[in-house]
Amino acid sequence: MARFNHTDRTLETLTSFIANQTGFEAGADRNLTEADRLGPLPGVPVKSIDWLLVFSILFITGFSLYAILRTDSIRWLIPGQEHEHQD
Image (tube, rainbow, N blue to C red; front, side, top):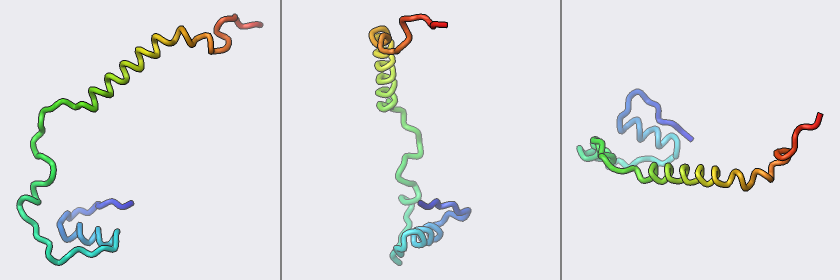
């Protein structure tokens, strides 16, 4: 496991870091275009529904409701619930 933690973040330092960690040398025909500088992720936040968050909330709510409803039916399994403490 490695971490690229250089102050000078250029293409040359990145390629030397990758070559140092993996042993693979980069090809000599590296071309950096303006499209490469934009990156793979959008630079502007996009408003949308986070379906993973919605599913997680529904799952936790459903499981909590199920656990609350089942508490009385499994309480008899816990030893010592029905008799008092003997001194």
